[in-house]
Image (cartoon, rainbow, N blue to C red; front, side, top):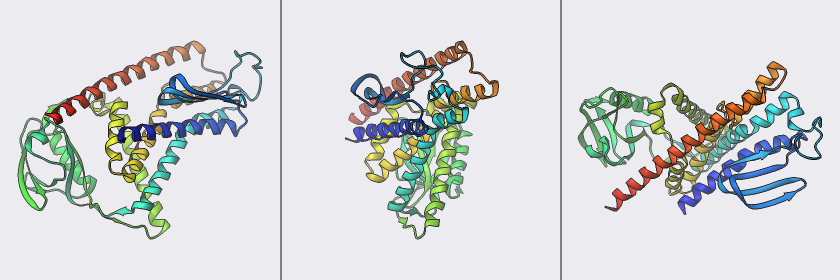
Length: 359
């Protein structure tokens, strides 16, 4: 059921993204001839007022299609064809999907803060959320729920600064022991970590976050509501952009942290176990990720189409068809290849973890 929930959330987010493109075109009077959720063969298909709506076999994707002059009974000079509209109107259609996902994420965070409340300020130390089997943290005996208070006898600070300080120390201590002090249900313990060297940096295989209490404070005013939501939204957006930026500046290291469809569904399934709050958080995170991903300047994505359109606006004529085809084909193989690689890697890791849990 949790897996089904995460897939349903993904499908809804994709639907919302495509609906952004669809409404931006329809409201401007631009011809649309197809609205599809998913790829592959159609499972459900319905034609209504000249637009074919379909739900396809593989729901992790979607598209809005527009008629062109190559179709029968289409006047190539028809002003309502997308290609004949002014650049600004086409930019609005192309950007609408990204804007829809960002708007949805912000709305979800508003709902989450309204219903759950605002968390207390972080307390000293770092909270361990999870550890990976056979990694340094797991081998040292670190457990989810532990609070890391000291490193090498030095007290850690609070919030993201404390997490950054610990991560920096771990990364610079590859294959060297680190002494930490933890609080486990009120009992202080000393643990020695041996970060493993990967790509020149130490890692321990643990998910960490600032030490924040589970209790929350109900919002007392609209100012508190929007102030906290703005901060959370900006933080998630910036961190997501930095993550994708890392693919360019430090691909080898960042690619290991990159999640494919299988991992995303797994994370969604885990968060859905927390109930409505977990599902809302998952939806907001993935909606922001969809927005940033689609903004990348790859021809198969909105960012690539936007780039071609802006170049056309500067040149006064479209980018040559041969150039568009060549760049599109290369990006297609890049995206498909990366997706297949991530699916194989994440599935293998998931099977290994399940095997370890069953032993």
